[in-house]
Image 1 (tube, rainbow, N blue to C red):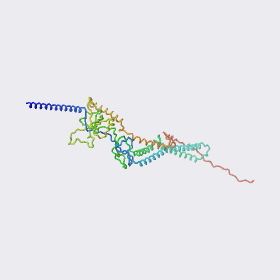
Image 2 (tube, rainbow, N blue to C red):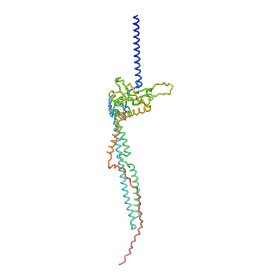
Image 3 (cartoon, one colour):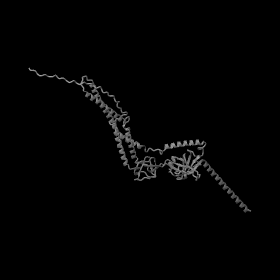
Length: 445
């Protein structure tokens, strides 16, 4: 009897222990399920997320032979640092030739101003000669004594006056043509000088770009060039990766996309640092299409072998600069990312209103990022054209002098051609034959 009672107690104890274990499992499952439900409600998780950054490919801007490499992979370089140097002998010869052409053009254009002054001086001399002939003709017409001036003299003076008039008209036409080349412009801004200056700028830029510079600060990677390589403009040489501005590309399922808005907070854990390091970020924007749309061979959905699959859309998440400085990352690292979509973020608004406010927030964030970083603009190449123009100004100044080119703002034009009227030719009568008295024979004394 006691044995049966003892067995009954054992079975009862086991039954309670079993019920306790089942109860604990049910409670644990409920707790886990509730936490997963809450997390699914408040967060969007994905392990298809990677660290992304700028990979700036530095290319040659001029043709030449590589003579020196000044940067190696994994090396940190500042903006404007010389990375590769090319052989610059031919470029220097081209600069010297362009400089000589510009100097000769400046002197030739300056000679145009002197030519205008010379033509004006010749016109003045012709007008003085015409005034003298006019004076002679007027004096011939005032002679009262018949026969004092021969008709041949008057005719010669008249012909000379007409010839001078023709020469003056010719000189004035020549003056108009010369003035048309320099009218209302100085030597430095003459079209011929500007054309030669543009040729000098091209040669100068070709010479300056024999040194390949880093457009932004960063770490050198993927160096492909070696000393002795012959490169042309556009040849990839190496890459520069800025590690102070990285972001996360989280590929989110399209079924979760409706709850994601720009400006929402995000938490990122990187496999390289393990679960102990947590990065914080902000959703900057959502890509305008799925990854398959931008693939090299996009899918063709109209074919007969269509299979419905859940697509993924990339979401850009900005990282905090201070956290990047504390624990640097590298582009391509895998992450576990979750985005906070609950707790009232983006809720309580209409769909259009929520998207508008999110876009405005993303625009402000992006504007601040663009202003804070120099990765979207470089001033490295701004001094190249400035140096060329400084050299051009020096060349023009050295080959231009005040007596060669007065550089008038508006060169005066010659007065209009005066109507030259030849005075009437005085009428002359032929001289009567002079009568001499006839001497008679001498008489006798």
